[in-house]
Image 1 (tube, helix red, strand yellow):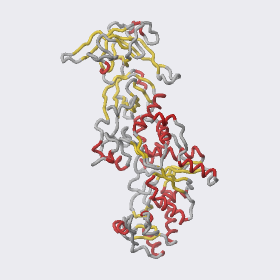
Image 2 (tube, rainbow, N blue to C red):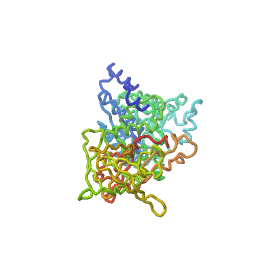
Image 3 (cartoon, rainbow, N blue to C red):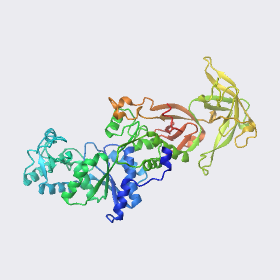
Image 4 (cartoon, helix red, strand yellow):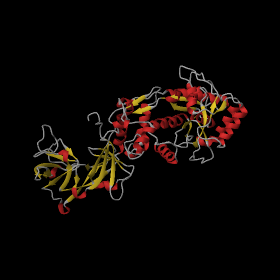
Length: 557
């Protein structure tokens, strides 16, 4: 499936068809979109879809995209989230024209509310939230009018002003639109426009103690910015009627809402509330934990922005909810890294090899050369020191091998990557019978690139010279959950956390070129996977995160 996605010529999605029709008809000369996150958490892979969609459309068809923070709920929002969101959008490769906030429009929104009161289309309600819910009715039964619904315009203006002045307690009054308590759309049954909340706002401070609800702020903010195509996820389909009603009654720019399906990802959760639980309850190490589906977590893990953009583009958008296998994301990451990652040799679980007939000349060693990336002809080579004491992977030796075992075994030969062919001559064990060392001999004429030995071997192993090795900690990340859809399982979703989602290798042995590892550079540890230097690295030691394996091994496990 992934290969087909990679190769096929993508047709227009339904939003592109709408925009092309709008431009051809002359309805718009160019388009304006917006990405409107609430700054109450870190962005995740689902938001990446929306980012790529909104910015991608204006890049393709001309126009621009605004970054607008929906900061109408002061108790859950923070400047930390604002900065992280900006970092994520830029990292994905996009730049907004205007950085805006719903709070920029608080004065205008208040003015719009006054307009609706003056038109007899909004009223102050003293009912409690429980009373409002009771009067709302059900999808099959009409609601009942609030006892405060027929207050005079003058009384509503006075009470709304006093709400703004801070005379009333939180929850004691709301401002509601006067529409139809028998409407088939429950959201049209006199929705709340403003609530009282005496809370400090991250931008406006203590200027306001009343805050607009999302449904009142969103469409009007779009209209103020003259957004042509307001793109939301499917759960906002029922809100579209109210979106249009407010704009029509206020007589402002006719922005219009379009909806596409939310994208869910297997083996994780996408709810900000649940992600916040994982963070607060220490199931993960912060919002940017590499196991998290957040953009910052994926960036820290070593996913590339180009791979995520390719994933979003290839999977596309739909009108129905869909769930995408995490393996597909990993496919695009793996494809991207294969072209760019520097190849390096790193031994995770060392077994010492002593080459008894190698003296290495006066220095006791020699410098070999190996390609940085065979996929990149211009990638050059690096120096790799070779000596008579090496580390290989313990799993690359078997004392009693089965047939067709092509790695190292007593009397058997293998090639050392970019070096020589060696033969295992003797196995050294400790008092408990554990293998501690292999005594081997090398074939001098078998040097890689100049082999005249005539010997053919089927196994090639990676290795590291003992005296040149650099140590580092490795963090091997896997899926955060052990079931595809933890949110749909019985009980607490956290019961399904994968206990093996993080495995530590406290001391891996790396070739000396890794001393020069830099943040943001991708490395393929030969035969092991793709890795990236983690921010926890310091002068006392390097830490690397496994981005993804060389192939998908999850189903096999």
